[in-house]
Image (cartoon, rainbow, N blue to C red; front, side, top):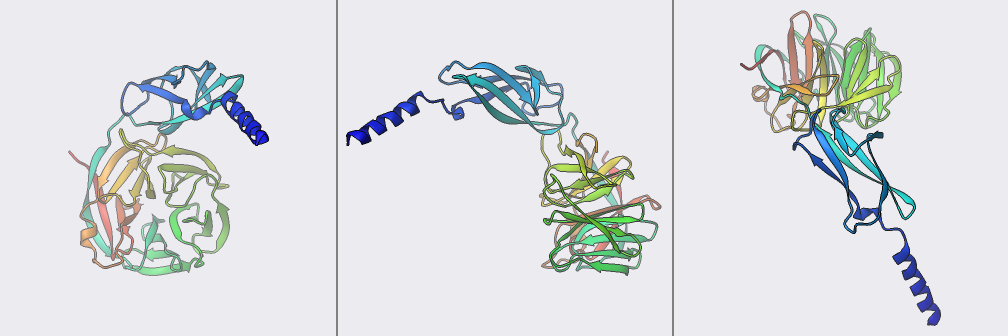
Length: 342
């Protein structure tokens, strides 16, 4: 019994004299506005409820050393602030995340229907891309039904079709230099094909991006969405992820960025599971949403059936200077003009 008591008191002594847990400390951020933007100032401090003697406090944002007064000058989206300090001759680190938003409010856009074309109602559209005046390429999803299709958009005639293995869920699609690039959803693998024959050239693995959603390109780089608020820039030669942007407005972090299209130096994106059908116009350098396109009404114009799903698929036709849009299991392909609201 005495031995047990001795062990108990030794344990209690060790606990009482040991280093205090860092959970009682936190970073206090005093900021100049609710939605932090570049140029705003933050003041940093440590919440120290017991007034313990903590020393050598250092603050970092994304691993760069900063002072306790800091003017925001970082990329949009989530940024991690870390505080390191010494307590009882031991060093501790705590962290906190702040979000940085765009300086501009998005402009509002609408659309005008130019033409309507037949679209395969069984196609669960994930990617849409024009190659020339006639040929439209489409990537479709769903396990066991995912495919790559070449279509004459005016009459809906299928010119070539390749089914993916049933273990793959097809996603975004883009074309560069006579090659087709296609994503899969959760398998973290993409495919590169010969544009004309659909012969598989190679596959590539994802790196930090968590899934495959949408693809587009500017002729030099490929841009990839992964279901989060991130859009990744890929080197087209080796498909390595070079960097990423976070998609934001002046007061929101936008996630579930879906199918992508490149036009006039901007990324046009579908969004998934919003309250209504909207598209985004995104600055590819910063991630700022410069425009919001109200696509409401399009879904009402297609055949209503149990498998009908959200709008997805946006492609720009260079010759006609119009956009083509459709959706998952939609029986129509719409040719539209997009214009800014006045």
